[in-house]
Image 1 (cartoon, one colour):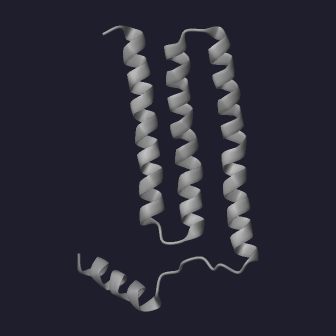
Image 2 (cartoon, helix red, strand yellow):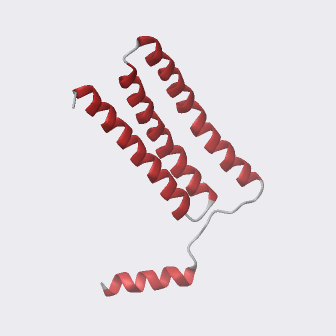
Length: 114
């Protein structure tokens, strides 16, 4: 396997890993705010790594320049979109998730027992 192929495969796999982390964050986190945070951070990095793999695989300066523009667009729009969603939810009165006081006491008791 050539070095270029290994680099492309590594970048693409790490990008896929971060995309999976974003999906797990959406499925596991309890409210809109934490889900938006998980997606905006790890999805941006995942897409960036996949685009880097595409740039390395292309071998063309023109294609690499277009991919850099795509990454710059993604780098700007993803955090802004997450912020707009969170702000809109906040203005609509969506409350952030909080630990139930009884559940907090149970957690503290189990941690003390360990």
